[in-house]
Length: 96
Image (cartoon, rainbow, N blue to C red):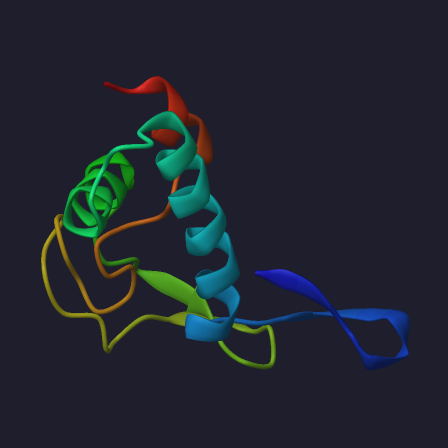
């Protein structure tokens, strides 16, 4: 993810600290669309709406360099790079 860094510049950031606020926002959208859903049901809905392209062949490293991805393991439903997938806010509120 391209994000602002100190000095008003942009830099590539990755990992849990970048994903968490986005996933929390999608979880809030799911809760607004399904107000009676339990936490377990919200977790299932969150995973259901996620898009998972599987392990990538290349990724950006912490310095923003495009490198070959050699450490990702797993399949299309769950893998070491995307976990359960990429949160999709539109799908969260439009899919049944």
